[in-house]
Image 1: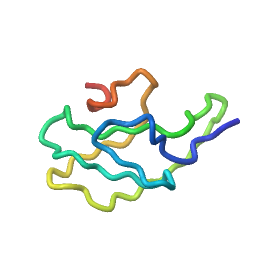
Image 2: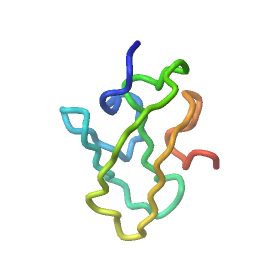
Image 3: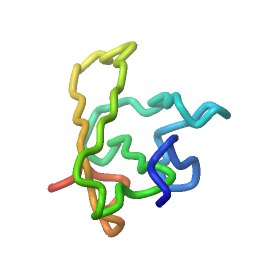
Image 4: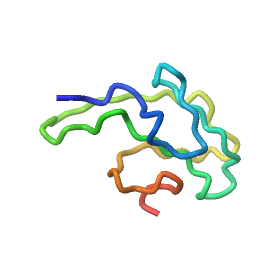
Amino acid sequence: MDLPTAWNRDDKSIYLSVYSSGLRVNYEGLGKSQKESGIIRANHPIPSQCKLFYFEVDIINEGKNKIIGIGFCEKEVNLNRIPGD
């Protein structure tokens, strides 16, 4: 069973850059609208047979507008919009 262990450098919005380790993400947009959302998926989905999954993130800089969302999304979610919008 493959579990998520890093961010997917190829499955992200255009406003994000990912460090080579795959463990750190940097937002490079201006954050002026929802169209400048930074969304990224993990390198593997959480398997449905995994009944409990723990993950942590550290927010190093919340940005000028302090709008941050952290959550889960399906493969079909548009990576250039806030999920659920």
